[in-house]
Image (cartoon, rainbow, N blue to C red; front, side, top):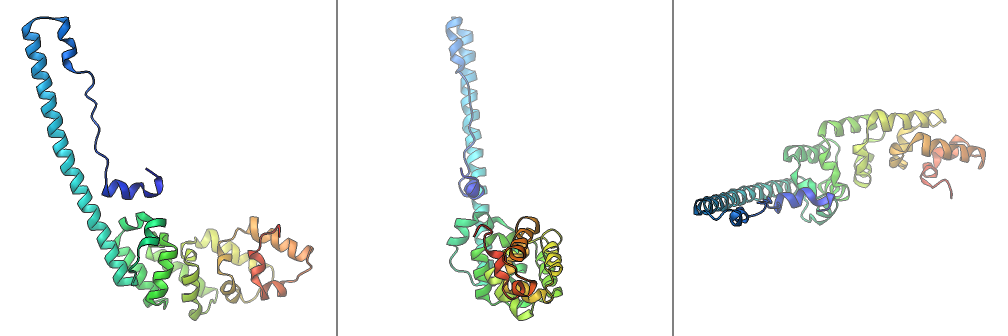
Length: 245
């Protein structure tokens, strides 16, 4: 089973337990002709077979219970996605992140509600963000709130937040200290004053590596192209282009 879909397949179609009985006990019959030994072997074989049948009965019962529980979990997640985000078509989510249907229903509801009620996204906005990046559903809502507050702190306009998260939902999964802060420090360091506007024009920049992406491109733009910070600030997309182009 492929790793991507293993959890779902194990939940809705768990593999039966395998039992290896080894060689049949009657293989020893030819070594001793005594009827007592034959009788003992037959009884042993009978007991083993009964044990196997009982094991399989229990195994099938447990498998069915697991399947039923899995379907209940999937239905609960689908229901909260319908009610909180207006999602009706789950094909994108199933194909890219099937494990989403086994996540915490309460957290999913809180994430969708927060994006609608506090960030100002419409149901359609939330649905698009989740369908394009379903891994968002596993992010704890408290961390999503921290990301939103950080963007507000660098003066990203409130009215721009819904469009940023609709188009670039992966932004909500970034680590503030490891990902965002170094980028913001770099942007300030090259002379950009309006950080919020810069980020709004190129939201993915918050996930770029300063060492591997931003610094080499900045060196090229200033040393080879003779650009100053004003030209870059006016067109942040320069940082999105591959350096070899």
